[in-house]
Image 1 (cartoon, one colour):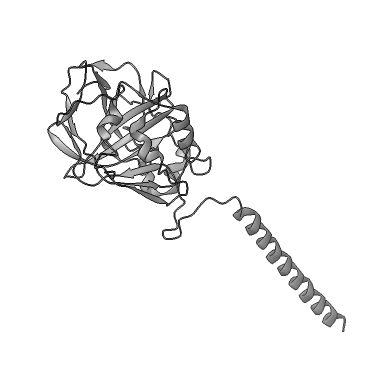
Image 2 (spheres, helix red, strand yellow):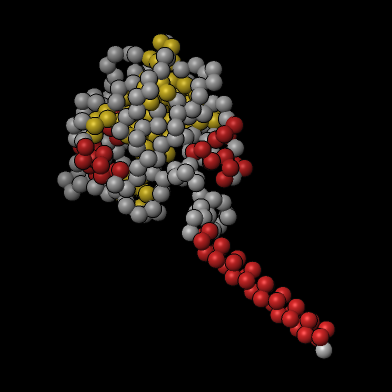
Length: 291
């Protein structure tokens, strides 16, 4: 009988121990899940972002596809300091007013552009795919950050990328952005569409005016970028692919305090810190007035 009691008692204690372990596991899951990083259901990947748990410092740890974010030697953005003055060619570009889709990606506000707009770099034509915004700027100039930065992303027929960076500082209202700013989608995944004409057939969005500090554009095609920094770098977001031709315009444009605040109310602090130059050449070209 004593052995039987011991057996029953031992079994009961074992059952209680298992129950306690199960309860502890549930509690750990409940408390841990609240702090878990966002996981993309379709792939099981941790979604990259700009917070401490999924930001630039840990991008390379989130997926093997992001290894260049830590190990790449030609990464972007960089501090635009001590550039080498050079006589570089003007860069032709032809940006056409057209319908555009404005999307909140969760990381930025991205404006998708249909085919037809392009730049030409080193004899190769690159089609404009989209442009998007960062606040504050990703590139700095001699350590100085700007309120925002726009990136115009282009792709050639052989899959190479060229990005035009446009620095933005607080100042006068920039009317050319009004059609986009009036359609800023506040919810990640949301898309707004901008048509290219009004009822009187006047153009709504003309991307050429985005680059002009004085809102003056000559009616010529193609226009040309003359004053710019030039270096070889990477995407500033995962997978941080290298081999990207960077053209960062030397003259910033202005946006009003209200325009900047409207963007930051939806997206803010979506900037990757500057990366080491690692022996790369940074050139600057000054060609006087651009057209």
